[in-house]
Image 1 (cartoon, rainbow, N blue to C red):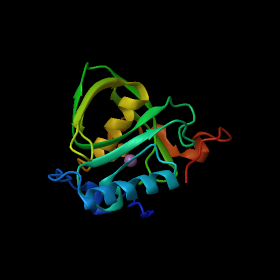
Image 2: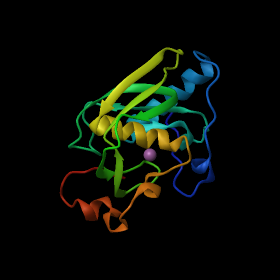
Image 3: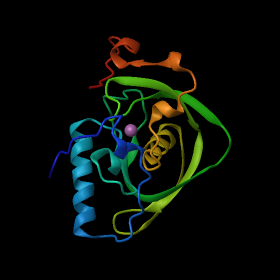
Length: 177
Ligand code: NI
């Protein structure tokens, strides 16, 4: 078990295109995922991508029952998703507030596809194929963007809706370090 430090916006690793995982069920891959889980849990993250701990591989994790960073979000099943492919199921997009452990203390209004299918594997190479919507769809798009070197501020349309969490949501119990 290891809590790793999370790279912050400005670090060039966060701008790289992550490489696909080629070998599954290896000690290295299990260790990476364990470190990601430990780090995400410690920081109350809704999700985490491997590049955020400095590993430029196509690995993301996400999911929670209740999350103090997103107190109004519906639960998302805990998922390890490797080499993901996303396909929007319609052109519909919706705006909502997003944060990122690599952009601490801030939130921005980000448009995301409302409905999408995601496809990939878990750490054992087993296929994952789901069609999702709502916050689940949003988290997947956010995490998979990290694998393309994209951070959520690059998706913001209206920079008047970008700011510090404690200023945007005073006294609303939205945790953000
Ligand atoms: Ni993020």
